[in-house]
Image (cartoon, rainbow, N blue to C red; front, side, top):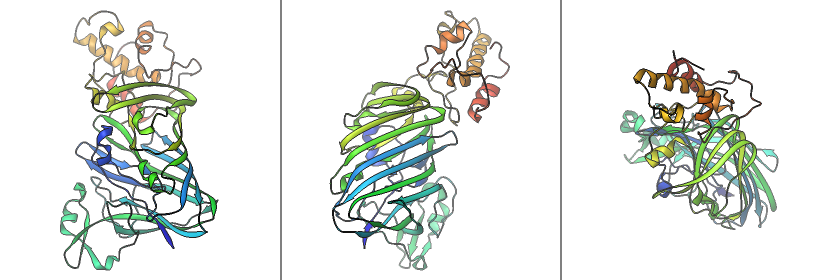
Length: 419
């Protein structure tokens, strides 16, 4: 019997790629949702490559990783692997650890079932795999033997009961030693000699916090632990289906590979941030960007971050037209659009400034959907907004408006005059 182990790490938030190694939570092929909270946000989930416990003779020949960023606060992940087993057929126990959530008020679950993993599926060579759950010791070592704990030998520590929201949930053994634990999902799978396929899907709650409506970290570097120390053929797809999403990723992660618009409506541009690195900024509406890399041996981890974080990192003044998310809980609300941008003159008074602010707020949801403005001032303004992508075929409708859209219309834009 051989074992393959997946590990999840709960980080403190960061948007700086150079510090990411200290901050990642990593799943594995079967990544889990983890919810944790720093002092300015909640950490919800990540993804990872399949990680073997022991040295093996299996190569990662191909991977297609598809991530959907959804309006309901969840990320949906679809991972397809082709793995080549150069040895004899073998039975492999596969699984992952998911750190216990914190800053969410969840009590310890002795069955090892994580409260924020949804729609978990896994198949190998076309056969559905039955998953079991357990509580295991959470180890920082990625080459750790996967073994369920005998909970009759442990009890929940007093400290853990009193500090659920601090991420210190631990068990205490009969000798008084505290152990940090994690929830585990595991199953047995049969590896044939030669080519094998693994397909995995799941949903998990995305991270968010001050200056970031969402974050989707994904740990890539563990792929180097396979026999070929790389992914021979790697494809990454990021989609915004039936919605619009504005985000960025650091370029250094992909060793020279670049994104392209593969379908739908979208645009891309490149930029850099001092002491952080180069990035690709993406605006998508019902579309998909794709990146392809052969002989991919990543040295850094990936994080898909909402583009409001760019303003935070650059120290720019936040502008109500610089970022928009239909379902985001931290929508940019600052009034920094000038009258020169809109009317070509200064505001006459504060009342006129407020009226302009309300007018823009009421129209942001429509601009996000590509409405072609007939009003010359609105048209002039939104044509300067980078994420704006006009769509003459879109008929004005509120059928798909989200909570964030109505907040801009009915709260921030309330009682304003004009279109």
